[in-house]
Amino acid sequence: MPDATLIDRYQDFRTRRFLKHERTYANWLPGWRTQRRRRALVVGLAATFVVMAVVSALCAFGFREAALIWIPATAVFFPLWLTLQIVSGRQGDAPLATLDEFELAQRNSARSIGLSLTQYLMLIPIGYLIFGSVATDGADTGMAYAGGLMAITALLIGGCAPAMILGWTRPDPDPV
Image 1 (cartoon, rainbow, N blue to C red):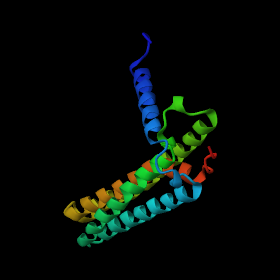
Image 2 (cartoon, rainbow, N blue to C red; image 1 turned 90 degrees about the vertical axis):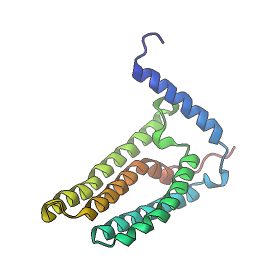
Image 3 (cartoon, helix red, strand yellow; image 1 turned 120 degrees about the vertical axis):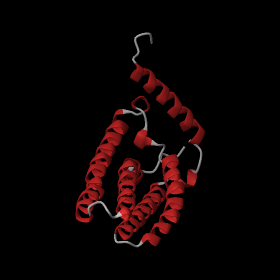
C-alpha cells in the first residue's frame, strides 16, 4: 500500500492486532458466553457504577472516608469488565474491517448511545464543579476530588456502554 495514509496504516495495524487477540481469547470462558451470563456481567458492572456514583456523591457532601469504598468497587469493576470484553468478542470496539454490515450497524448504534450517555453524564461533574467553585470561591479542596470521581464514573459508564449494550442484546452464540 504505497498510497496508504497514516490513518490507513493504523487501521490495518489495529485490525491485525484485534484478529490476533480474537484468536487468543476465542476459546476462553466458554460457559460465560451465553446471553444470560453476559447479562449478569452487565448487571454487575452497572452495580459497580452505582457504587462509584454514590461514593462520589458522598465525597461531595464531605464524607471523605467514603472514598475508601472506591477501591473495592474498582477491584470488582476490572474483572467484570475484562470478562465481558472477552466473552462478547470485544465487538464494542472492533475495527471496521472485522465486522459484517449487521455487526457494524449494531456497534455503531451502541457507540452512539455510549457517546450520548457520556456527554449527558459529564454535565453532572461539570455543573457541580462550576457552581460549587463559585459558591465556595474555590476554597473547597474536597470538591475537586469529588468532581474527579464523578467525572471518572461518567467516563467509565459511557466508555463501557457499547460493550454492555451489545453484551445485553446479542443472542447466544450458535453452537459449534
